[in-house]
Image (cartoon, rainbow, N blue to C red; front, side, top):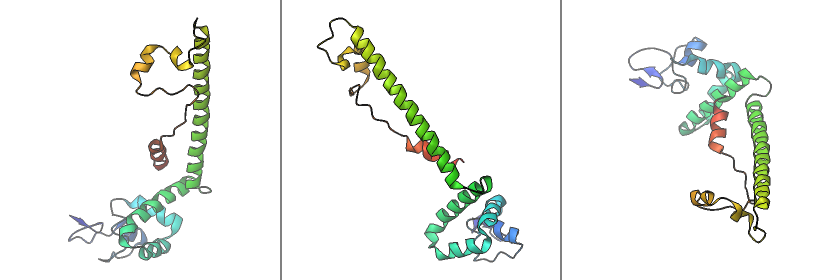
Length: 169
């Protein structure tokens, strides 16, 4: 069994104490968050923030928030190691640029669809009194539950994929 990042009955120090070459006390603040089998996790946090600062941050937080704080520090430290100047902000900025580019491409594609539908509408004889929605083939109406106007296309962003991309940096 593991308790506080160490095997019960064994004197195996947590990754933080192992890196700092000190004895790992029973009440070690690092042990629950930096287990011995994940040494790189503390190494990157220590390199960016320093052990003393991490210790102070963890002790200033209630225990129920420490896990999230460690996750944030690990993420920021890994981003800072990859990009020493911008860190997480560089990754976020890159993702925002990708979103902007994809939204512009989507808007162009939607405009092209509208243009093609209007061309199709104008080429159908006897449709002068019909609306553009009626110019669509009947099969399109049967597959969709609600028909949107050709000019009422909203852009939507899938925030779940964006968040997964952000965390995979």
